[in-house]
Image (tube, rainbow, N blue to C red; front, side, top):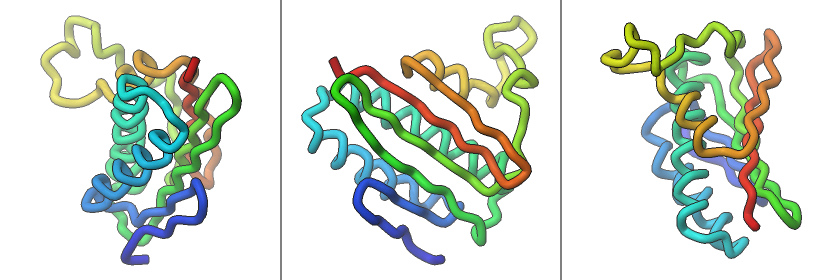
Length: 140
């Protein structure tokens, strides 16, 4: 796969940072189409970018043959977005606390902390076939 595939509210991209801008355009277009305010759009866009970046670097180790899926859904009160990769999985409990003194000056390790701070709910489904992260943000 050498370009994104969009079907309805789902986008599949090659595991390559060059497609992050495409993800933003897709995501923001769908969210604005839902009439979501700009502050929530920004929070969701930051969170999705962090999760896609994590998939590219940590799950796929920049293997461009692997793909990442972004699915957007909504109900009356929430936007629910699922980001799935084809990596080997990880244990979220093993992530170092970015607020611990020994981690404050590190260049990495804040992505999931940021996502958890911006979203109302973050759920992980981790298998040996990949990781699926579902984030939920209230739109009320």
